[in-house]
Image 1 (cartoon, one colour):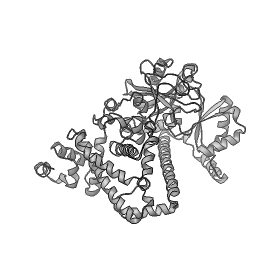
Image 2 (cartoon, helix red, strand yellow; image 1 turned 60 degrees about the vertical axis):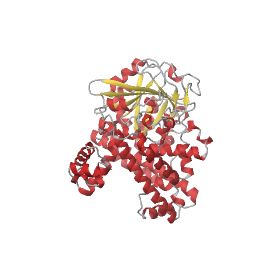
Image 3 (cartoon, one colour; image 1 turned 120 degrees about the vertical axis):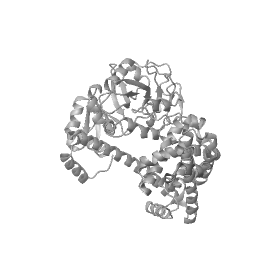
Image 4 (spheres, helix red, strand yellow; image 1 turned 90 degrees about the vertical axis):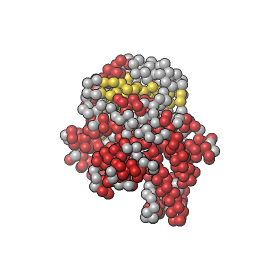
Length: 540
């Protein structure tokens, strides 16, 4: 239980008397949702940073203030930008000033190679270079990063790839895996988790790039789904209010002590409550509370508010027997990703998250197993997989073989999706999470306007990036090849005042002459004629 002072509780209650987002207008509620998601993300980053502090303090014997002072001193050297992540992963916190200066010069070179590689990959996407041509620069980056990163940081990265059994690897093998994961993160923009989930260790760079990565997904989906629709879907309460007829259970919002009677009334009508943070994702913070197990209702209410600040209470979903059989401790939800163009709906993929014994949550991020589902028949047509890269023919706890297992009343699952796709304006490409109840109704659990593609790709080990880009009408090259150019255009705007759109237009013309785009900014090529550009840069 979180430690909260009575003074803080009183302040929270007083504020709740004057601020009630449920009674605000739609625009205000959408703004509130966006702020809460930003707050959640900042809180997550603070938590990661604090864990880093604790690790460094234990390893070095320095206090947090001493670490901050050291980080500030090294940044003041002004050799290259030193992030908190680098400060920890590269062991700067244990370096002398002289050692840090040398390491920073190595980092500066690493950043230069990274920038060049991003331009190299832009040229690959433009058809002007091959992967073989840039391999020496990739090797140079990996070698340099290997010298910069501590053995402990390398091991921490490699340990994420559980299916490779890094605990049995020697230092050279750990180094190879960790540096490949770092290259993939920095240049190809797949997270360490994505590297593991899609078994990139066994794949070439072109094969890796067939998979949708989280970075590009986050760039493109806000261009397909409006900010307002994403904010509504980020807020589980607003989603419920718009799709209540397809939820099939009660849901109430608890935000302060003033909601005591609402909390109590919920248990007047329900024997079990699913407690959920209103704005969190990936199954975080979800717990099950049974009325029969509550000894002191008021105390439980206060403890939940102290722990969550605001949360939702949902009715428990009693799953159909065929769903329970897979794992009786979790609801075992289905994610159907659908694209709605305003007239027609196409089902892009279907997958299922199945929990492990003793866990109420089925999310892959919480240790669950994911399988793919045939979109037309509702039959599981893959083995299972988890986010550490392990694969399963059978559920390890219940022994049920996944491939060939038929989900019940699949036509009703699809019907539910078809019925809701147009209910949130501006939401076109959405991951709909559904559950099948004991009376064989398929109900909405929640929906995601920034849906992930783990279940759409990992079970079949099949990248669906091209299909995704084609479905949403995006550039077949994707968005990543433009990123390095857009950052360049932002720098040009800051230094020379030229609008970004104008710079990008001139850059594309420069590249159409057969010239390397990385030469554009450093030579102020926008001031030159085509003939001058060709004469100066065609042989570089």
